Image (cartoon, rainbow, N blue to C red; front, side):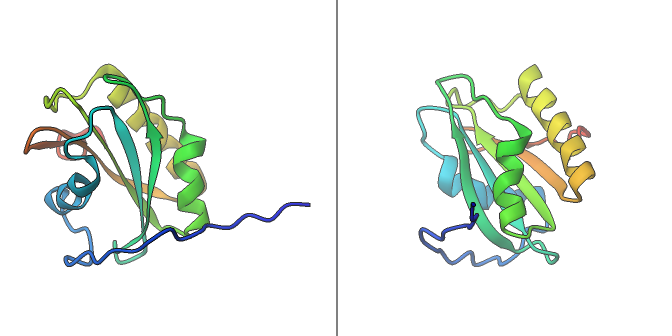
Length: 140
């Protein structure tokens, strides 16, 4: 016998209220990813109006790697009744060029999202006062 539930740890005011562009996503994610010494992978679950309903630090990796599996990414999205998700991670080096692993993870997440009906609207890589949107680059 099991019971699954999402537990709210805290809340914050996100003054933009919805994510309408990669820049909006960057402004939201940088609050959690800026100045981290290791890679952090974050999942923002969004409602049908692209308003954040939950933010989950899905994985904390090493200096230059983070192991991300679709089941862990989608877990909080499913429990949050998300219509879509925005994912992001930081590069502690400050450089925002996507690695081969970044592109592979994004592709797997998009495929998993299609199967379960949760769109991946973007994958944003945060660096030193800059970012890269994999949607803008054409990978999503």
